[in-house]
Image 1 (tube, rainbow, N blue to C red):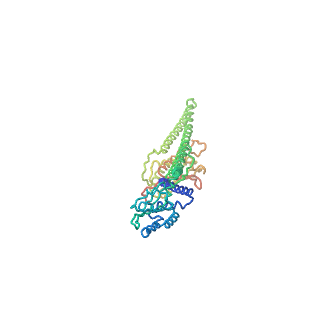
Image 2 (cartoon, one colour):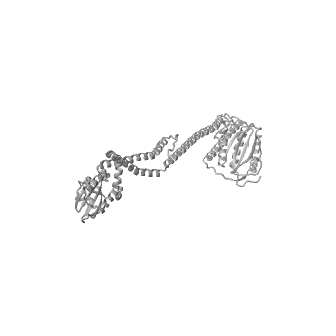
Image 3 (tube, rainbow, N blue to C red):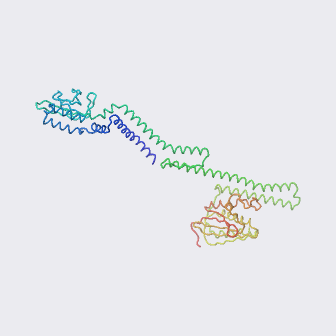
Length: 484
């Protein structure tokens, strides 16, 4: 139920419920002081609802008939006595007036001040007339006696004890009405405010926890209205904040790890360079051959540091998406053949065999230079860990829906199963000692993963069934594919 509907029903209940309770309260008062349920109902009907059609109308019509045909009966004492007895049972009374003199008055109304009765010519029904301290409903009928004298009879109905009762117990009724109104409105307001404040308090407590840095909790909405939706949205925000905090913590840990890895990988060649320089200064390199060897080592270490810094710079730019990509439609087979032709010369000294197994026409949408960097990082990574002269690398590709899967497999020692998911992490090396003797920076495969992700593809690795490691990555096909 929506809040709008709840408020509407609550306001309606604040009006209807006090009325219902007040009616019950009034009925209870009437029963307590009159002792009969029917009394209130009968008097209510007689005094308010009946009008000229009340329960004594039949008797009144009989009297009118008597006044028209047998008006002399009104002067007959025995008839008057019969009327008095019958009216007493009916809780009613009668006064018969001839000219301006009261001819007869029944016991119920004998003490009324007759001079206050309506004058001749006012025939009709008056539902509420005060005579002394008493309220009556009066039916008046005017007629003429046989001698031509004006005659009138008044039928009094003491059918308004409802009003008398109300006047008599007005303080109790008024106080009861005020109490009922205050209590019902207070109770309804309490439950309505509790209904609204409960989710607000829930969110307030959650906000306090978040302010204190606690995001490890869950909020379950207890309602299905606007506030329930708000609680759900608040909890979704908390979950996003939690994930953001975890990601920030992960980035911070990565930053610390990156600094530690950079420090380690830079310290080793710097220490080596400083040692060789000190050796030259101290005259340890006392021959031309030895000096040349020292200088070659210094040059190699400096080159390694330069490559490490360049790769670290590239990785940082890829990490923040600041590397520009020049995507274009490229036919894959000629592209790979040209690439392999270029690197075969570089790999010839290593005795490495590299072959392209798949050969069909298909176009992909790539950045040439960056995909070449990916291929270099994967292939030269394999060459580092395979004995010279025994390395064999196979390249193949197949279609997979809107993507092309490229596979680069070697015949090396592979990667332990528990480490294969980490080979694309920064500074990961298969060498547990993290030695840089192989010349690697530990960033090559991490850079490859970043480039493939920028192309909208995926990269993963798996050990081949025999021996060696296969690295697979996907590239998006161009919209218009070449013929097979």
